[in-house]
Length: 326
Picture (cartoon, rainbow, N blue to C red):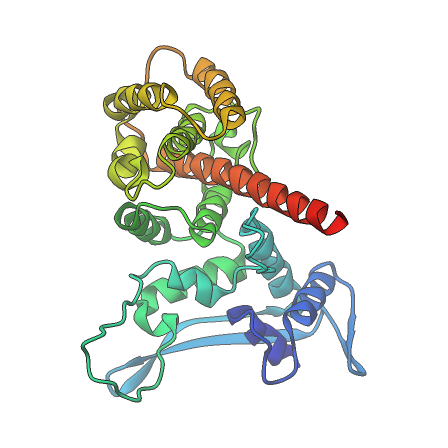
């Protein structure tokens, strides 16, 4: 049962051994806090000694990546910390309870696209872990199991994927948060490494990310059916060289605000939020953002977007409820 519980870290889907996501989380939480956990008549003990041997194929031999031994309670505590590190506000449709290691690894590789012209073959479906280098898998697993900082290769490859995809999905935002929680010494940055938006923060890269999200919302409000937004054209450069890009974005936003909007109420709200955020920035934009500052920018953009999506979804739910009442 200990081995089955440990293997549950890799997937959020119901396991063939009967351990579902809730059982995995409840058991891990209890054992992490030094409490016993009863599972179908079996009492799991946090003081039980547990061994983890990581192997990978190396030509005709097996290579030992690492070997760890400790009590299961210690490993459970570090895994529980991993859950907390990657916990983040997600869209309402995303019911993920935690970020399984396979999902995390999947964010470090290019998304596979289906070739419609390719011949149809029955092939065994590859898991994400098979497309990630064994060095990366080993380094991430050791960081999780030992409670140590995540490898710099993780944030580097995630940043590359964000630059290519020009988007910050929930899983990548969770990785950024988790990585810098263990890495940064910047107290201002630590204040925004939370599960949800920190609207009081004046940390400049974070505020710039929020402003970029507002600029995008203004563009969408003025041109609802636009196919290519400022995110597609300016996201990477705005998060790298704000002084060069943000004046352009400001001019575009001013033009969009002069257009006729379907929702004048939304127009007034966005203008008010934009005014509050630009006051925090002042007259000068930084010429360049470091890797760490780009992480803050991306989190600011992500959280401001989630704030918008959650309000939209709540408004739709309220409208549906009103129609049902009628």
